[in-house]
Length: 84
Length: 322
Ligand code: SF4
Ligand code: SF4
Ligand code: SF4
Image 1 (tube, each protein chain N blue to C red):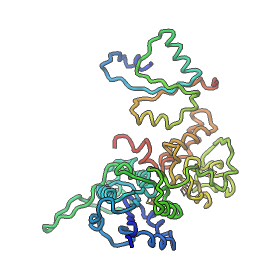
Image 2 (cartoon, rainbow over the protein chains, first blue to last red):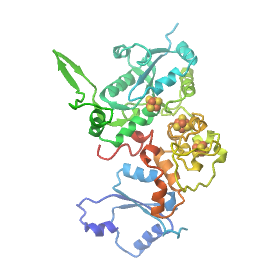
Image 3 (cartoon, rainbow over the protein chains, first blue to last red):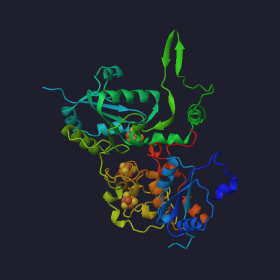
Image 4 (cartoon, helix red, strand yellow):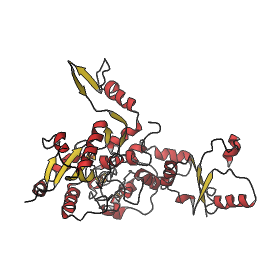
C-alpha cells in the first residue's frame, strides 16, 4: 500500500513487486477489511494470507514465499503489548 | 545358485567418515558380504569406473552414495551409478543435504580458490599456480574435473530413492537398511530410513527440558562448562535436538556436547535451520532490539550453527548471486 505511494508507480505496465502479506486476524486483517469497506484505495500487488496471530508466522513461511517468487513479505500484527 | 544382489558404494564431496561407518559395521560386514556382492567401493576395493560401465542398466541392486556434488566428476559418477542401479540411496548428511561441504555455498568459487591456493596461512604459492582443467605435456593431455559454483545435495542432480541420515550415519541404520532391502519389502520412495521423531524424544536428558525456555544469553561449549545432567538447550547452549531427527541415540548429548543437527529434520519440517531459529528466537527473554542483539551475540555464526549440515539442501541454498 505504502509502496505504490512511495514509488509513485501506478502505471500497470511498470514492474510491480509481488508482496505476500501475513495479516493477523485481529488487528491488521480487520484494518485491511475496514480500509476496503471504507473504499480506501489499495495497491493490488499484495496477496493477503490471514493467520490467527502474527506469532504463528514461522520463518519457514517467509522463506517459502520468497522461494516461490515473492518479491517481498509483509507481516502485520497488533501493536506490541496489544495482542488479543 | 543365483548371483547375490550387487551393491556399490561411492563417495563424492565427502570426508571419508561415511566410509568409516561402513567399516564400523565390524563383524556385521561379514553378514553384508555373505548376502551381497560389493562390486564397486573405491575406498575399500580395487574396481574402476570401467567395471561399473560394463554392467547392464539397472543391474546393480543398490548404490549407496555419500558426499555432496560439487564437481563435474562427481556428477558424472552419480549419473552413471543412477543408470546402472535399481535403487540409489543418499548416504549421510552430505549426500542428503549438502552437509559440511554445503557451507561453501556462503562463498563464491573465486573466493574459495583464492583462499586455498593463495591466501591461507599454510600456503606458499608465490607464482599463484592454480590447477588447470586441461594440461598438455609432450603430446599427452591430462584433465582435472571442474569445480561447480554451488554445492548440491545428491537429489538435485539425480533421482534418489531413499535417504540414510547422519554425519556419519550410525552403523545400526546401515545394517537395518541392508536388511530392509534384502527383505524385498521396499518402503515408499523418498523415505528417510530413520525414526521420524525429534531427537529430544530419545535424549536421556529430556525430563529436564522445561516447557518454557527463556534465554538470557547464549553460551558456547568451547568457552563454558556444560552441566552433564541438565538439558543442554536449557543451559543456554544451542542444541539442535528439537529440530533434528532421532536415530543416533543422542550420541553427542551422551558425550556432553550439544546436538549440531546432523540427522537433518523430520518429515514435517521443510527447513531445519529456519525451524530451530524460530524456536530459539521466540524464546529469547529480551524485548527491545538492543537487548535482543546483545543476547544473540552468543551465536556469532548463525548460518554455520543452524544450517551446519543443511544449507545446500535448504530453502536458502546459497548466498544470493553465486
Ligand atoms: S556426512 Fe559427515 S561423515 Fe559423511 S562424508 Fe559428509 S562430512 Fe563425512
Ligand atoms: S534440547 Fe538437546 S539436551 Fe535438551 S532434551 Fe533436546 S536433545 Fe536433549
Ligand atoms: S546428537 Fe545430533 S549431531 Fe550428534 S550424532 Fe545425533 S543427530 Fe548428529
